[in-house]
Image (cartoon, rainbow, N blue to C red; front, side):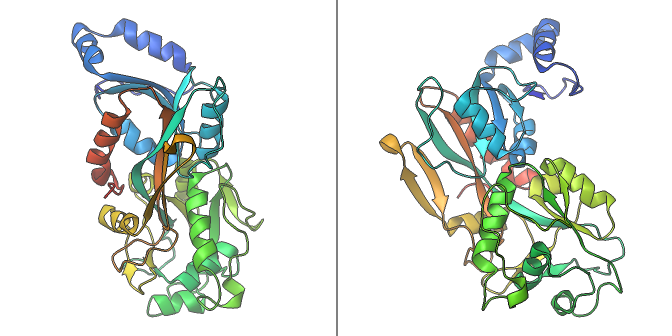
Length: 345
């Protein structure tokens, strides 16, 4: 997919060669479009987290290509300089919801930096068909821990009923949809579950035992989808479904999201302000050779009463000597809240 600053350009079919699209658009630009292209900042080609695809699509004043192939595939493309299929070379930046260790090297030896771009909330989006939740579905940590480890399998479960002041369904099986690819959304969610889904916080049956990472071992009864958009589509088309997806994608798909109980005991709906409140609880860390990498730690279970509990940060990686990315990050944060992201504090 190619993004240009002028929104009047028609979005083109993904089946057509990305490189051919780029050349065709440049050749066919009018004099006005050429003037806009000359004043926009060209930051090259990127790949990575699908969580920021909605944000990057909406940015104006920059010319670039971005392939939302998932955090894992994006980082691999950046470090190996082997672009994903359909993405032009070279890869000049990557986006990931999982910060790098700091020991990775780029093929060719170029130095790079990592900086936070924007706050993201990983929602538990659900299909409301057959459920009676006029004020929205509430889920305590005990309930969503049980749903996501496979021990709570029906919407009439007593734990869910207790969260919502009474039974919300007579007999509707829960169908969990999880990411099939290496995903930063999986990293943020599993890091949270690995922190909160432990006794004495939750019943023994609901304890999370699958660790944290961009991929984890989910129950084999769960449905799967590649990419946040396809996961949201699967939830929307499947009665009884619930799945984890970033808030911006959820909003674009008009799916309801569960209202989650946080560490302070408050039920908090996802919102840009609630995501930013969670990030404020984090700790900024600089690390790596020359301290050129930055991450925000301690986000797995934010303590603020107004914080959305499953929040994280998307990071941008780019070459040390590249220009234009600071303006890109500022523009992204200026647009963030309108699309469902949490602007950085």
